[in-house]
Image (spheres, one colour):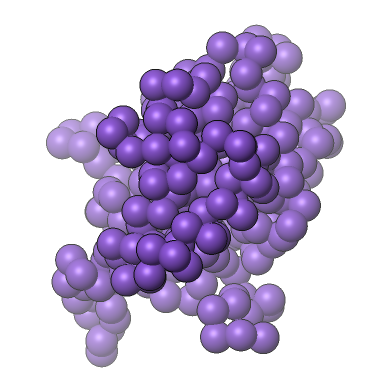
Length: 261
């Protein structure tokens, strides 16, 4: 096993009692979750249930107020010494964040850069890779998401689905150990959703550890190893996706699934 690979017996993500408030509003009210290497965990739930906030806590875009979060055995955003937590410096946080890929609802591509330049920019600027090395890998990643022939196109020349696939390639260019997807298809026209989900299916088949916030129940059923239903900042129900979708145990889960299926 290379130094960059997670220990298979250790969770890639471990959350214990995670709480997060914005002012007086408690958005996460004690989240416990475990995601093993190579697992695909799909999180569903109504708007405002805390799903996106939880993802942002995993890569320390948001600081948690209580509890503990580990990624690949290391505390997120903090170091523990003698029972006390010490916040990491911003450059240490940024280095750890570079190991976690994140794909948002909006594609966030640089409009003045071509597709291939968007994929190259992280490895060159953050990791100090040579442009030649980064370009070679970027081309391979665009091939992987089905856009090998669109490397010279600017974002404005691409459909929403194509832009989102470039965003996925850009996240993969940093060679992350974990991929977070925050409703990656919600901003897309319905006919473009499939091409993005296909790219994500490919990643899952290759063994990428993924946490996916989505309303795509078919994707959850087909690709997910675990399904988590969140509401009101807590996990209401979690387990095998096919079992939960076919036979939810909690009344709130039944109500939600009856509206989205």
